[in-house]
Length: 537
Image (tube, rainbow, N blue to C red; front, side, top):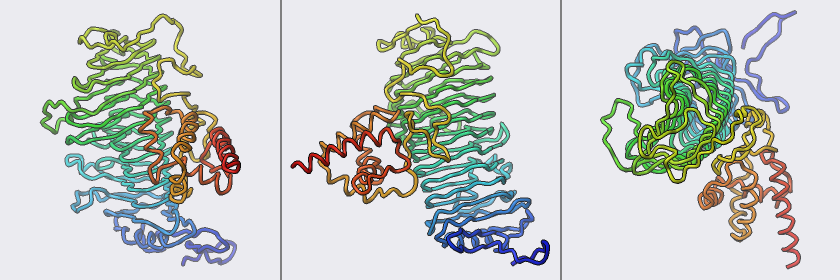
């Protein structure tokens, strides 16, 4: 323990064990960390983590500021007895040399519930020595449910800066990620096999994708991102190694993309299968972007000898609205879709992309089917017989000469079925309960009794469950995705929001905090009718 003299001698406990319900703080210095930047502090960090992980009263794992902590490859495993708050105010640095081992990450947090990582500190991967190898990622967050990450600065990762895999419910907010423009594969945030996730209000400038949404991800909100340099915001790559993928309900809103290779991109490999659908890019500002809007179903990153294959990931129901800015090339819109599995349901509205050099913008469209309204460059017949306006399902309406409404735009007549009202920035899921009076994501937080609710839910006759299901669909902005798929998703164990609401009504009639009042009242009326019917019988 340390002693300090403040108006006398007092004892300051940096580990303040819970008294009267107060959470304890576990300072890595008290477990032997030096913070000099040249001594490996990994063991001390793991010892402090072990103590915090065993605490059942929401402890804080604390890394103090003004110090630099050298860490070798370190994994912080769960599950733990409680949610843990990791506060990083100091600087963490990786070894400045190429290391070997079975792990492909530097730092990892795994199998944790309610993990919060924040602070004013920096995580520096010192990745320069790795950039010819492109092997290890910096921070790996695996199977962390209800994750919160905010405030930190990430710098110079060996490969991807932040990888989130298997995340169910989570938020990344207010972080900074920096790496040189020529640093290879240094993606800012890579999301994989994760659902109900929000990435917001962050600056990301790297040598690869600012944000990449990978296979198995759905119901993702990306908002308030400033991106550049780098490769833009991407869905994919998908279908690598002839794999089958499922990606849907991705919403990218109110982002600025500057001096990047790509703007908003969907990229898939030939030979893949499955789908990427229900994707919206809204209110995107572009500045000197090489490929502003691109769907590339012939993606090949140069390291592979890519062969032509007939199988492809189905890309459908993609909506671009209020995407505006400048490009450094002539092609502002580039849809390179599969000949055997064309892109369908593509809609563009209030899109204006001007060339910063030539002033002669063009659109390239191959095997893309959809419609547009107030779009520059206008999709034309200049490239293939399948150019956008020539597709039978395409409806081109340029009779309305009004200027695009960037702010407060009315709901679009061209929007695909998964889009309703565009949420304002105040209604995006964040640290506080969002405003659910608009149609936005409904994200469960904490333990709301999924397992018990599921058992009760399965005992209800299917006809009754269908009534609940239809009421639920009225209140979510991604309504209506394919009804059979949605019905299946909402009856799976561990993911049925309806079952939680049913259980809440049946047991306590108390609204869970993550459910909007509008949908709650609608379902409560159904519940009242059902109870009345049961009594009369």
